Image (tube, rainbow, N blue to C red):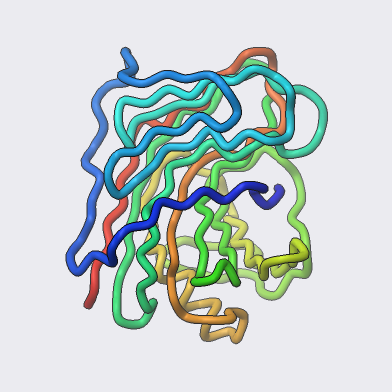
Length: 235
């Protein structure tokens, strides 16, 4: 599991009420498709990015909207190849006086051996802290130093929590005891846990993204987000 190498942000006003992505339509046809490592498409408060940096292989980004999209490519070798993801606008809200909840349903490739990590990637203001919540990973190992074990955060059980540095950011990794392809997340719960453990530089949630970090695939494979939603606001 590697830190994404190119953070893309969409600036916007701080919402005073929830900004929400509705449930997805079936992904049998795509309204948007584009090749290239930096392909992206904006849907209001959310943007879908290809964000592929670690390979010269061709790749495709497909989307119907911010909650129904896919990335397809053929990857080989080691190392994270990118982070196809959906990302919120910059919201900069205090974690103790606001809320951010989200949910997802994905279809990873099932043919052959594919190495990847589905995850939430969340940041505090000024990009000082990066919080990674692992949902489904076929890669092995965490990185950094383990700082906690057997924690229940936001209603989900985590066998280990890790802290690392990529040279520029403080990174906190929440590694679940089991993998899943669908579920809901109380995103603020992770920031509060890290804050109360003295592991954050500040208590301002900057933005939230959700996507997949592929390492290698069994030929041409597609990573599909069937549905995604995210909502936030002030208490």
